[in-house]
Length: 284
Figure 1 (cartoon, helix red, strand yellow):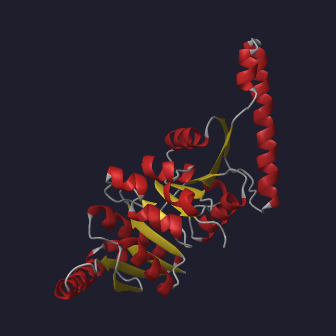
Figure 2 (cartoon, one colour):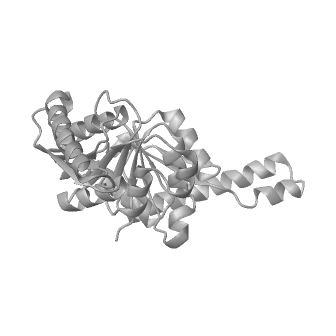
């Protein structure tokens, strides 16, 4: 396995390097550290920044405890940050890109997205966004499941990358009882409404069990949370309750203006939740 860790030398990026080092230790993966130099400036300044970046990366490989002794190399590329990271991932044949969160600029992010969002949106490689301080290897994980092929693929990828598996991987699925509002409007008793919601929960539970079985993802003793509500609200609530180390979720392929501008559950999670997030793109 090959892990690419991207850094802009910020504190946020240092957390990503440390997490990448821990993952590489656990999996025996090779590790590439990449920094992108802006090429939209005079050549002499580009050359100066390249040399400085090479020096800093070399120092970090020796100074960061989680990187010492690992088979790793430093890579400097030129260009726009998100494009440079994608090109580096392709050249390294990376199985995973690890990045820290980036400082957000509201208006620009609404229309373009942060660097990490653009890497996730346009790249073919799973991306781990590191939000939290790095203290130990991941012990528990939570996977969001919407019973789609991308969510099944995300679970498989998370386990193949060495994230917690078996009973240490909990699943969360959100269901919305569509007729609940009509029942309320029709004046039915609360007991009748509660009974309808319970039936819908039971149906969702059976569908989830069948989905996991069909995809070879069932595991005895695994925690499954079937929660009523909109997907983002449910995911946020369960993340807070379980205090998992990392959230695993698939992204759904989109194209054109929808890919560039419109939000999704994955993007809302990436922008809002303070948890490490593994975002896995659909199979090509």
